Length: 547
Image (cartoon, rainbow, N blue to C red; front, side, top):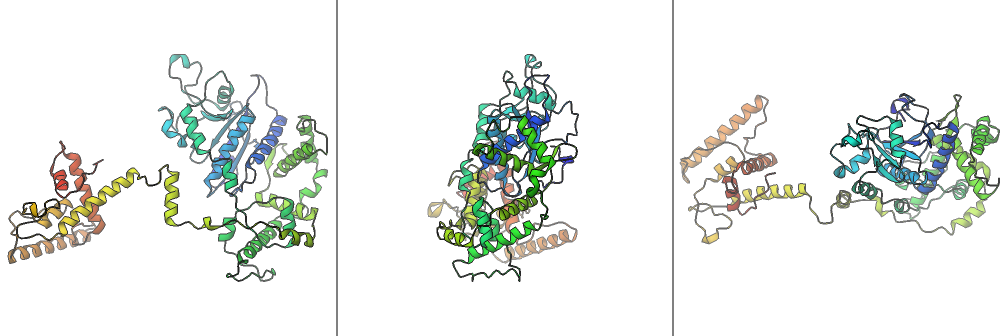
């Protein structure tokens, strides 16, 4: 699907194309075959996704008629897109669905991408060959027969006649990947990296479901019982919405244990009213059987043996008919003769809601009896996550074991230890014999050292004179003079537009400068021992890795 020709979509969108391979080189893929294939793939995807609650859009397929490139180079295909917005797991569920579809339809060659391009390669980047880069990956990465395929670049003269040197056309790529005699499967380690990312499916579909109870008007409750509906409880709970003044809703006090159930029911009911307001009274669903486009669509399916010889009215025939109807209501035949998305999910949901409400209103007494046997709601404590829990989840997603420290964490800890050690030494009160290093104690020998000069040298703040005395008024006068000079220099630099680090209070910037100078000195040491390492050893601080 060409993004330039489609309606504007948010960036968080995954795009996919399904190319049916030709059985013979001269064969042509008919639109009738594509339509039937679209219905079958949509039915399989719906079955595999089960009770999954899509965050924004659901998985959809259509026969693609928006080919802007040379038709001779782009074979007929199905296409679709799904906006996942804040839930990236929807994108990976699409990858899993496409991989499963490729297992059931072995003649399909599937491409999938998003705004980052070939995001499957990003997930497997550590195991890819060196030649495979974003600029060389175009029309080379596909899913087929349940595996990831990468069309290789020829590495030997013998491979030049088998694999393309330049970017292959889509038609060439589909023929290469669909040919079992031409090896295009990615290496096993690449396959394992991709499978590891989607290994949570399909189990995650069930574990991500949350059961909640709510109070609903009995017609709405009956509709919900006739057809399973899934929705985002997290969105509903955190959405701030007050009932309209004339809606008739009376919420229980927040301290009442039924308050949450009443609030959920109020939000659901008001939402359904908004959805129904988007649908006209003469919606297509009530007149589907008299629609000419529907009759043509159904005839094409029958000619392509879509119903597999099932007797009309049988359970299997009804299931196939429901799948065909759902697909048709999502895509309708245009005047040009091809299917195109004609309504957004809200309008489609409104059509289905009106059909269910009109089909069988049920009785209020039955709904009251059924409400007595409802199971208790699930615990919603998972909706509240502390910063510590969030950090643990992010570390787990990054592949770290509990308690394991990352390289960045080790470097941060080493830098903080250097700062603490130097500050501790500087703050230590020295005797008239000089300062004591941490390891020296009473057994060590005194060292005559100018504390301020060491600290300023480490922080890169300049050097002091060599002939300073250790006590007396002369030292105090000299220190005061130096500090006044530093303050004057800082004021002059700031007036000129520069940020000075010569002020008496530097905080974290001074600490960072200290660590940078120490690491620079360590990196410049030709041997294991040097001035910087000797200072750190003397202070009892482990020498950090300068890298």
